[in-house]
Amino acid sequence: MNVKNCHNFHDFRQLAKRRLPGPIFNYIDGAADDEVTYRRNTTSFGDCDLVPSVLRGVSDVDMSVTIMGQRLAMPVYCSPTALQRLFHHQGERAVAAAAAKYGTMFGVSSLGTISLEEARQISDGPQVYQFYFHKDRGLNREMMARSKQAGVNVMMLTVDSITGGNRERDKRTGFSIPFKLNLAGLTQFAVRPAWAINYLMHERFRLPQLDSHVDMSGGAMSISRYFTEMLDPAMSWADVAEMVQHWDGQFCLKGIMSVQDAQRAAEIGCTGIVISNHGGRQLDGSRSAFDQLAEIVDAVGHKIDVMMDGGVQRGTHVLKALSLGAKAVGLGRYYLFPLAAAGQAGVERALDLMRSEIARDMTLMGCTSVDQLTRQNLRFRQNAPY
Image (cartoon, rainbow, N blue to C red; front, side):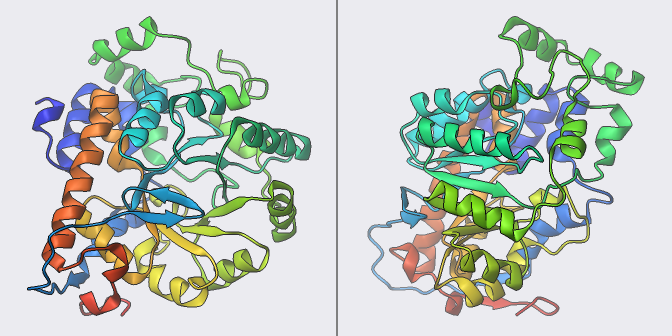
């Protein structure tokens, strides 16, 4: 199979599984504890049915949206994710270029493998910086200043990762950065020599946003220790309010799951929130973002832009979220598996498929623009939240 024969999320996932060493595939594919929330993120969409309208004269479809002042050609964006050059040597470069081609937003993580500045050179489209809050307040201010200088459009503070989740798949293989694999993990790398050759033939793996703080050469500071030692579990609403004022621009909190937290975000001046459980990678047993979407939109949707991510694999999933009031939908594994499978060509193929699905599904729903998608188009099944 090659990327041209991939027609959906599951095809990309299978191709990535064939090409990646087991520990790296499971790092992308895995989640916390028993992975209940991970599965629920996708199955929650199945509890909701679409009710199409016909004979609406749909000759053209406009799927563009504006979120946090950024105009997107389609209502999905590439959520910032860590360590992308582990999956394919092009990493964020591929994602930035693909997002620019399809007119949507992308982001670089604090644990990104190219710099904010390089990402800005690749794409002049909307760019997000996914920020982690550190114990070192000076480092926080330094990274915000650097983001502003680089031309980042939206600051996205991750608020659900003050400590790492219990990702048992990684523990079974010994996966960590720098690599400290156990025998089982090393064996899985040995059966994927093409990945190792590709990894070694390209530039040294690094984390440009944290070069002076996290040692990638096998020294004392690993990614797991970064989460447990450098991030501040005492982060409070007062800390975030100070950051919002200091940034003085589009500021988004990623990882909001309750109405009360959404309301607090609006009160302190955030311009957006992402309803998210971190792809099921943090607190297992957390509700899905889709299950929480309606009540949060009802509470704050008139004040700030509400987005969501988690489990999105189809254009119909996007339409359901938009119908409940989400302004846009974040994609994570949906583009990471294609990235791992084929680099930029894979990400472009995935975004093209998603764009085609959304256009087709809007046509079948009888909608010519995103604002025509409403809750009247939905019916929830028994045991669903509405």
